[in-house]
Length: 287
Image 1 (tube, one colour):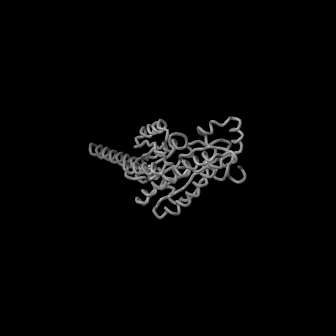
Image 2: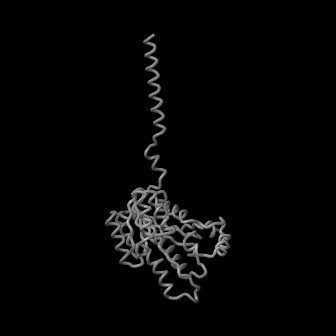
Image 3: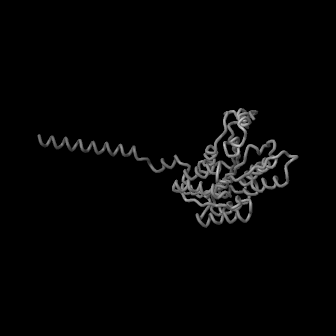
């Protein structure tokens, strides 16, 4: 009687232990299974220009959420510091920069500072830009020069400086912010020219830098809810929205999500492309 009791107890103990072990095998994921769900941006060093607000700020925070250390570059110190604080809350390293990248030497100094602090530059997002709209016959030389300097020369300056570092590393991702206006838009001769230049520059860089394992792409946003579009009268804004197949404006976070994908290893076979994200506005004859 006693022997039967002890054998039964031993059997139950063994079966219970095996059951628990099997459950643990199911519950605990393998390391590679966990990594497959991420964009593989952990501990990458990213520079986002014009990241004090709007698309730039949303992109800086998105990259930090994906694990990157982010350099927040903006000429507005207060805005840049506010974004950096959000990044620090995510336990990511950050650096606030007020360098004017439209100045060649200033852009070079910024790249050197990033390499000095972090040892590398993995990601460059060229987002900084301005508008100075005017019809052709009223467009001043000053407005033309200002937009070209910020929107085209700036990305060239910092792009060249960061590309040199990436070439040494034999790796890197460059993402340039264009606009659907690169195809032309009334009252934006200077802006359209600068963004068309960005698209051409993106294709050229992709061809030149591919042998160094550097991907270069561009995004052309459409009508995005931002500080600029919020200044447009509601009536005019609604009329424009009706031209968009999705019948709404985009938001900065949607642009940021596409940026994060394009600077991740999941997009390693994409380079030299300009991807429109505009709610279908430029699809077919919708625009």
